[in-house]
Length: 420
Image (tube, rainbow, N blue to C red):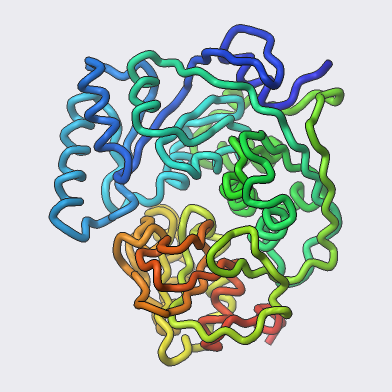
């Protein structure tokens, strides 16, 4: 019997031939924490007597960047001090979101095993990495031992057929799939995405797909390691000979094989307060919005900003709408500046903030008021997610968010994307 990608990677890191359901101890290639989780990691490391981490480790200041208050500033100082003490690289304020900065660094490669103290660590499956989120104490244990224990997950294979319709993007596809599978429908599973739609996606779209598998409960997710992946990594300084593609065997066993034809898919919007509530935009009654947010580890990448600029060029954000844009990294911000995208955003009336997670997690830079409705490119819309449990968050693609910001209500982006 052949092996799935998850079975192969965990087997390679344990020195044993593993199948789904097996328990094992694996060597971990890379770990990280962010400013919402690193304080506990640092405390546990000291308690465990860690002086030099036994696996590659970095920290990223992104959830409250720059610091919005005195307490967070203490956490940031603690991270900077610990970075020097443990010899760990620190990505300080302005560098960007961990799930963009770490792939950009070229430090993780197909076939690697990565643990992060953040639930959306599954994003790196777009590079063929078994990556998953763990708690801060689990991460500290990994740093003390260089290893951790795993239960090998069963795998769902999801085949996405057809062709992306006009105005429909990777975000619409994954919102639709999550709604069909359910918020807990893939709990502790690995998910392998394949099919012509997945093959056609650029890397930014694939990161979006893998980023959100945790929203259906999955442990990790994978898209194909093909020429697009190799070129993406090569463009970030990785030598081609170091990139070793990984794929499932043809006779691999899957718990489920699901097929979705998205040829007629419309732009999707997830309603408050669950991700698995997506509806075609035409079925939503006109919803007035008070805030729009473009960014996050899901959709703050360059292609997302390009789509936004296409819609916003020569248009204005509706009166009474706060439109906040956060590029996912400094690298993306600089490229957006070079391409003139930031100029478009500011002239349209949007506010561009430092690369980071602030508005998404509700620490600063855009906390909504009671009763306000927000349309966001984020991956979660749980009650209180953006810092106020009395607000209402809708999730959509960058195109839908921008169209809605212009109209002042949730709007279909397709008419905005026609040639003018």
